[in-house]
Image 1 (cartoon, rainbow, N blue to C red):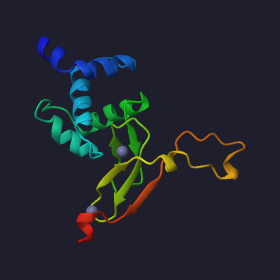
Image 2 (image 1 turned 30 degrees about the horizontal axis):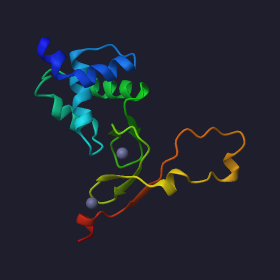
Image 3 (image 1 turned 30 degrees about the vertical axis):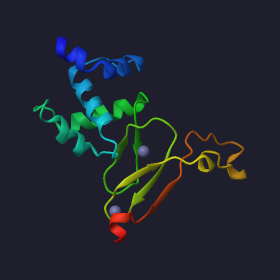
Image 4 (image 1 turned 90 degrees about the vertical axis):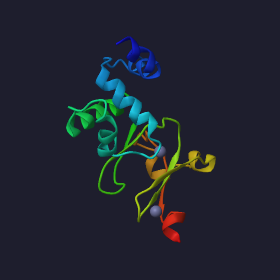
Length: 143
Ligand SMILES: [Zn+2]
Ligand SMILES: [Zn+2]
């Protein structure tokens, strides 16, 4: 346990800040999520944690990732191909998704950050997320 406590210092801190109970399973799943900058699917995270958590099911990993997203530790990207994707990056950013290989690229853009809302949303709506999603072909698929 001592070893785990030291190895997962950052993850422990994040779980604590979000008020989530600290378990070895959560620590390992969170660490793998943070290690994946490529907007992983639940299957990618499951593959990665299987070495350390051989008994853990895809469903458990999925429910854990959803609890992270409810706690604000990651966001869930829907409508980007068949599987849901999980995004550990918590600063404001935008996405490009490749329609051919499914790669998702993060990008920053202050103009997009500051997009003005169409007037129809100014009354009666609460906009909680403003991010731009581009799609097309990535350079590899464009060759
Ligand atoms: Zn591509
Ligand atoms: Zn992202």
